[in-house]
Length: 103
Image (cartoon, rainbow, N blue to C red):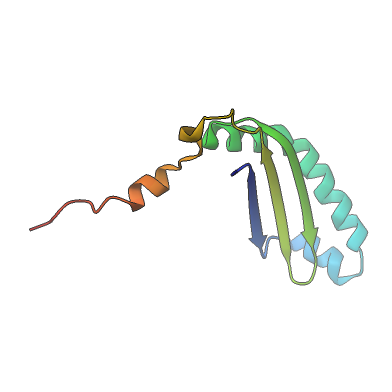
């Protein structure tokens, strides 16, 4: 069942964060990011819920310093049994059509 969305972001540290990291202030960057993620959680959840049409039941986020990575993880509410149509993505439908014959 598709109930997890994972986004991995590369190279996302700001200039301020990079300066702190370069001077050994790793924990300061972790704390700053945690504060930002907590402040933005409702907005992040809303974006994913609108995009998927499903409720987000859990949101988790973390960063990794070297290499510079961030991960955003969203767990979606399970689909009702027999509700297979909600798991079909529009991209799958678009990929399965040939778009017609141009000639």
